[in-house]
Image (cartoon, rainbow, N blue to C red; front, side, top):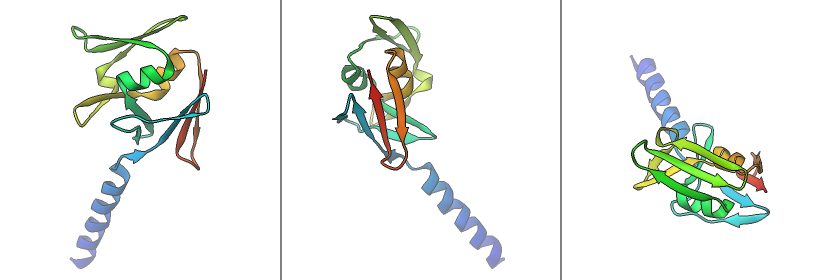
Length: 121
């Protein structure tokens, strides 16, 4: 019985640790960005607040309420990102940074040692 309880306790602690959001740094053309709420790593994806993330990438964003979709536009075209691809943190919609960055034609890379995303436009 003790072994079963210990195993369950370890499992609960492990799930809690792995489910926690991890703060990450975001660099655009070498400049560190700051967002509120901050950029986070969750489930293998980095998320940033929709409007602040778009602004740091120099892209226009429009929210389409009828379809619950963010439309991000650059000089190379527009991309739609559904709300369901994002997460809500403290009442703010955060969307996957890679999708936003790649919509601009930028190169997006992950630096695991620093827990940082680097975007070069």
